[in-house]
Length: 230
Length: 324
Image 1 (tube, rainbow over the protein chains, first blue to last red):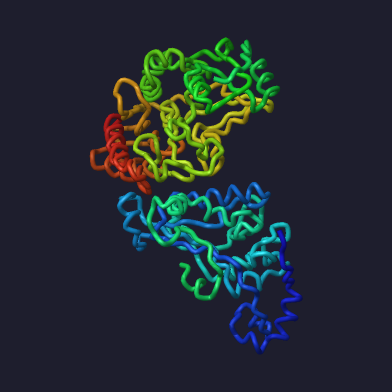
Image 2 (cartoon, one colour):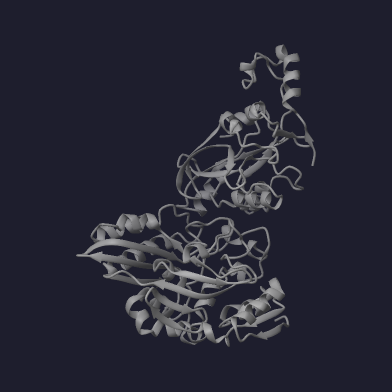
């Protein structure tokens, strides 16, 4: 497992040099009077297809379990919301009538990650192998700036508890006293465990469920992809 | 069946010693109804089996000042027929009487009933599912018509099979656990855990721990309780859905209620939102219907078990009207 040490100091120095080229695309440091360089894109982002989601919560549970096994926070990094506006795939609608509609809300691995820019202790880092933006829990001081800077809410009824939540895609673990977020299961052979274990994905790969997409997929985190993730 | 060493314990200390010595290689044999089938199917292959049938000080039903004390090895048939249990802890007597067959109730213990493993046919069959350390729940996209969740399902979609657990939740029981550490007592609802906490087990017991006692607090005056269960075979079967309710009423108005569901979730499930809807109100048909709706709110039925939502609602309505 490697990581690119994009320290805040390096970042600011590079940002000053590349200010003109970078333009105003990155908003996080606008108040510092400089513009940072664009960070490398993440090799992957979790691309969900809500029309195929049956709200089984396998992704949430395996996410928490895998990270617990790595000695990290076991907070799930992907959350599923009830979402009546989702239009279900015909096959899902036929097989799971009355089960409900859902929306998967993973981290988008932003091309210009506000969470990375605002971390004061350099705990928010980029994985050297796949570019995933992740939190080094050993460094995290739980200041909450990353959470506050994340522009993407998780706002709705959480499927797990059927209760309303208003979160961001960065989660606070009260027990460990750290923030955490999707790290694309960095270093895991086989990639993100949620994508691998999604039972709908498994049935699609087996050809049991006919569709040209996966319920959860990994795709390069281009700006276009970023815009298309809910 | 894989061969094993039989250890006949005579006291709790001997049980604890054997469990501490052999750890995960040992299993407790109470009535044996569940463990034997697991071993015959090689789902579980313990090297040491610790019989607690001869441990004398865990066979009892005593009504004391603070409530009903039940030793973990008390057989279900005794619970079902005990005068005090039938009178003041009716839901428990009814639940114990609804377990399996008369033969099994004469062997099966209350402790064993609480600790039994799921009846999901993928778990019981030749499928390497999450419960067996695998990486797929075959029920999610497979045949999930009977013993699979409609509520709180996640990862593994089994349902908890215990009937008595549902009654104990409704009756606000506490479970005493002995082990290498100091004896501890937990609320019945905190005893059970779902797949999110640990998919390989269904309760908080560690390998070297065992249940020694269950205490059901004395119900307040004017309290009634009941347990209802629907099953495929009326004579004996596991619950497709079950409900236990305890209601304290004054002049026909419900002062406080506790309501728990079985056969529908990975744990025996207390439904507090339905309980809150009942407090301070006269239980009518309309109110029982509302409570039933609340009890199943958020249900996520699977491909073949949608009927269990209606079944559960119907049981909740019936149970509430029975104790009104």
